[in-house]
Amino acid sequence: MPDKLKIMTIAAFGAHPDDIDIYMGGTLLLLHQAGHRIVPVVATCGELGNQMTGLPPDETWLLREAEQRQSMLMLDAIPLFLGYGDQLLADDSETRAKIRQIMQQIKPDLVFTHDTHDYCFDHRILARLVVDSISAGVAVFHADTPGGVGFEPQFYVNIDEVFNKKLEMMNRHISQMNASVLEMHEKQAFFRGLACRWDARYCEAFRLARLPYCMDAYKYLP
Image 1: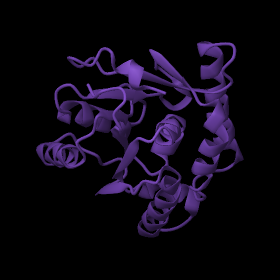
Image 2: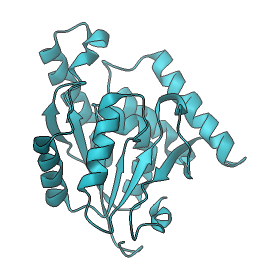
Image 3: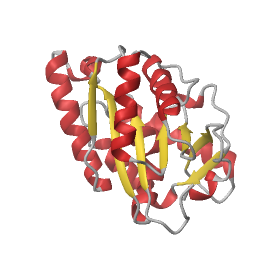
């Protein structure tokens, strides 16, 4: 594990454009404010988000990539796009090699990704690939699931001071966000805050992958 005073490189793996913002955006904003370097990695094109855009899948991908680049400016980060098809992420040798290559390129001190029990196929596959590709001693935090379904948090991060910034970051995904989507995620953050402590209004929830030498990784959360 890194020295607690070290400036860390933190990799954030999301299956689709906007996943990083939604499920770990507040925590990443806090880590960025503390001076750490954030490297976002987006696995799929998110082209099936054309149900929201009304555009063909190829045009939707270009739009969603541009939106992700805009939102990550709030972390002073340039996202890496792996370019896999939406709902087509596969746990195969080619994809595993690609994720390992990305890990070697980034050399992260900490990693955030989806939960292995998420309802979404792409989320589950990516989470498994990330954990299986990590170097020894590097901690992986699994982020909350949509609606918190099936997720048992171990750690909570109070995101009150950056919650409005998180909403701004999410709103840069103009093609995907509407009032009902934003309300759903606000309610989830409020519920996690209620479950965590009485003086935290909004929280993000995480659990730690059970990897060797990483059991004290919680101290690197903001």
